[in-house]
Image 1: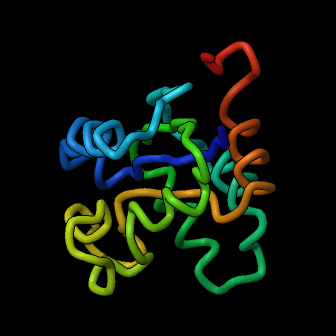
Image 2 (image 1 turned 120 degrees about the vertical axis):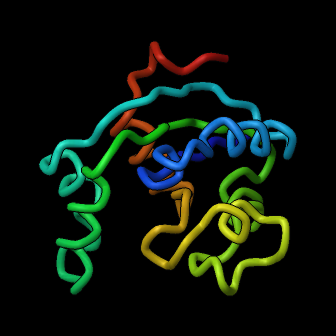
Length: 138
């Protein structure tokens, strides 16, 4: 079994869609092995998105991610990282496949409802950023 990190972003939580998204994730065959509702500080967001520090959208992204609570989760399934990225849809909700989370809940490229790790290495880093080993079930 492989694990990945995902988070429901502030606008999706604020819009009351967290429960719907979690239900979809479970219906898609993903096992939730850790989950928490939390609020990122500016420092947290800057550390989490440090890989994008040189990109022009970094400041806007980190400020946005501090704008409200997020739901952080660790998921488990065979081929989890790649399968989950397909499951949630393209970064731009306008280009996402019908029936995907980003198509149904995303508003824009920036407010696309959900984050997913893009590699096994980043998944491990992102999981350990939000969760200790004792918080991982299973």
